[in-house]
Image (cartoon, rainbow, N blue to C red; front, side, top):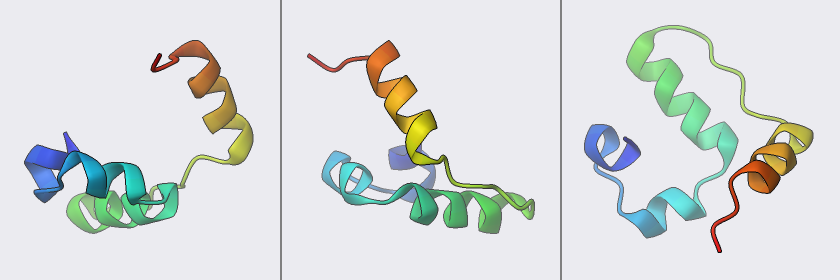
Length: 51
């Protein structure tokens, strides 16, 4: 979705921080979006491994 909505390449997406993505989503929606914390990211990485 970030590629379509923000025009990001896969590299730009993977180089971005959760806070950067949250800031763009907040700017687009007008809602305050909190970036995921480290624990949430670790649980997501464990649940959805890339390899």
